[in-house]
Length: 101
Image (cartoon, rainbow, N blue to C red; front, side, top):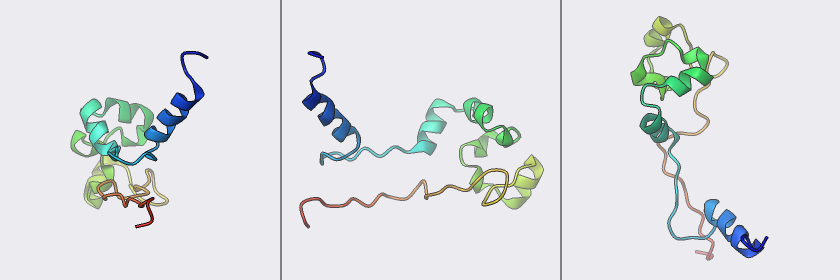
């Protein structure tokens, strides 16, 4: 297509994947969830196991105490109703240098 030359499209894909250097875009799923789904309606729609989790914890249910989980009727963690995060959402990503340093 004359409007989307291959080289432009490839550059955009590389940039979106963070392969062009410069600014590192880091998507923080917890922040996005809190910003755009403040009351947790979307989370509860697609994760019905979190229906009874208080608003304070709906975006980070793994931060609830065992007692709170008991009160909500949900268990968070491996082999339970809802999994723990695969990676630490608050961790700073390691950046691999591509210039050999």
